[in-house]
Amino acid sequence: MDWLEAAVLGIIQGLTEFLPISSTGHLYLGRNLFDLKDAGLFLDTILHLGTLIAVLAVYRRELATVLKNPFGRLGRLLMVGTLPTAFIGLAFKDFFEEISETGVTIGWEFLITGGALWLADGWKRRANKSLEQISYTDAAFIGTFQGAAILPAVSRSGMTIAAALFRRIDKADAAWFSFFLSIPAIAGALVFQFDDLLSARTEVLPLSSLMMATAMSALFGYLAVRWMIRLLKQGSLKPFAVYVWILGVTVLLFQWTGRF
Image 1 (cartoon, rainbow, N blue to C red):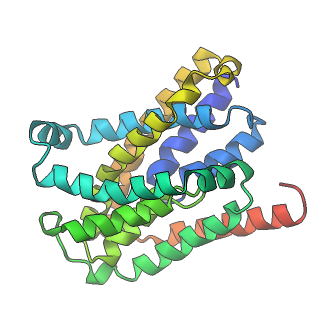
Image 2: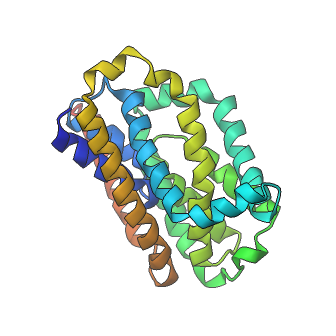
């Protein structure tokens, strides 16, 4: 992987982690495009490190509040929202790993993401619950949707934003909580993937390329978080739904014709 490929993959990861179009699904396509299939989970881990840096930078004040008072309201909401994700990830770990390696369902997963986004967009007018009104039931519901997004082409941000809108949480607050909830999810994934960082696969990835991938992922992830929170105040999720539907149909056609 040269620095240009690393930069492109970093940009893809940074944007698609927080835009509701599935970062893992796009990275799967990107690795196949650049013939980096052997890098696999290790490359994903490095790129997710960049997006973790981005979201930590955006939510540094809120995180400071949680660290000072981990059992305060924000801390409890994070814990309640993370538990369903952790349970789903651990209970179905082997299944998710097999699906991720083969990519056989990736086209259908893009279509599922599009369906959730389209439906959620219709709930925006009824969404008036503020951040201060988010309940533990809301957090658990959103965390359950986040668990479903462990599937490679099901968007984590898309599913959590959709779930928040289904619970009638205000659009901007839905995006805010979705991204805030991504911190333990991304950090947890990095912890579980730590063994892969020490594997022999690290030898095929030059340090300069890894640094470039991480930097681009962090920079564009930061920009994507800021942009999405502003977008949802006035914008629509339907263009994202149409995009992932087109992508899903394209992937299915390529699989059907044996080109992918």
